[in-house]
Length: 271
Image 1: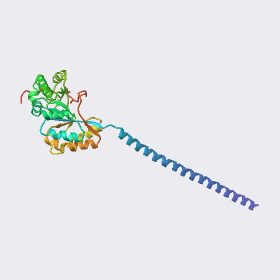
Image 2: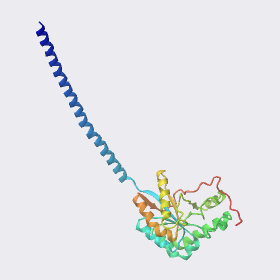
Image 3: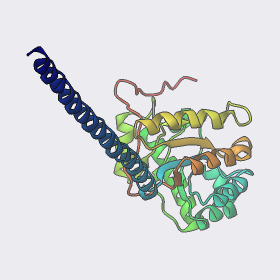
Image 4: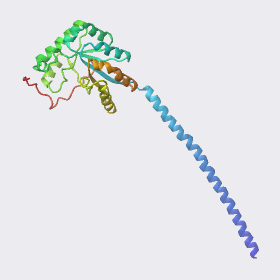
């Protein structure tokens, strides 16, 4: 009696073992198949992201940067123009009236090569320009007439000596505005008048990168001088390689001004 029972018990063990083996095999096959499906999907997602980034980069237009040059024209202007031409860049020149009279052919060249021309006054003397609203208006009107006589262009773009803060008070602004002038300041100061060699380029690039992260268009203050001309190509190379296009300021663009609130005051008449 014991033998048949033992035989039945052993037979049951064999059957259970066979079922368990089939189940484990199915589980292993299922995990293997799932892995085979997941891996291609992950790779496909990565490729799609790369493709989208590439397409997005190609579709983007270049970001605008405004190069502005004050105090010209000078002996360095032709070199500045040559560098701009090489990089297919345009700029805005805020010029002094006596310098325009001295080098009218350079002023004409600036216009002929597609750049914007603006006014920087006559004296570049804060004690004369900011002595009264009428003095400021007369300087800009005089510069405007001289520019028009030389080129036929009537420009309303102006930059006041040393920028609008702190001496261009609200009353000054109203007078200039009522006569059609548009005051432009800057948000990148190259300090090219004080930094030696290409140091000003490093300074400009650092400021551009901060503004670019904030989504702000750079408006760069530079000066029409030899040191600026000598190293301008370095800056233009950077702009070209990093997706920027240097463009001129148009008359219909909303001007950028320093915030005058609680910062502006009339200039003391005492030197």
